[in-house]
Image (cartoon, rainbow, N blue to C red):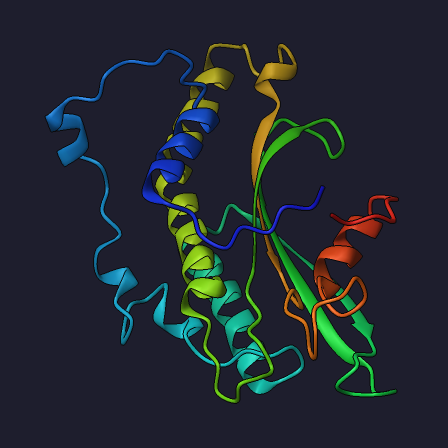
Length: 223
């Protein structure tokens, strides 16, 4: 099943951090712990926040707004999280709104794996959201569908990055890196294009980027 996340609440971001850092015991959170949790702060200001505001534009696939948001993702990760690898999945498709014209769709995949792992030998916690917006009504921004979830995923990635670096460095120093499958865990963000229907939601007029991503792994069904 391909999961498209439209909204990631704060408690889920905490759960993500705990899962990635192998925190398995459930214990009560103290008031001091809650007060010391990192805050998204100014990055989520809708007018000039460094993470969120550049996504709050109409971003229909194949339009300048969509390309601008793609550039924002790439520039932000290159600047703030350079250890994350970046991959594009490019595809095209016709749509009911464009007739025979092929519309481009670009999935952006960002990955942080333990430094000793090899491709294909690592499990990952995957966070998925779409970044495109609807064609109609004109000027539709889609703040919660799904600009904010994309920004939350970026914030979550930044929140765990330093902890992952320290954890993996300590494992290598202790000589326990790669000692078992439980150690081969990374994090992956999938920012998918073309989730929205161009005319009316159907199996063929929706999930353009998600279906392409799914088929890349040899599957032909998307739920």
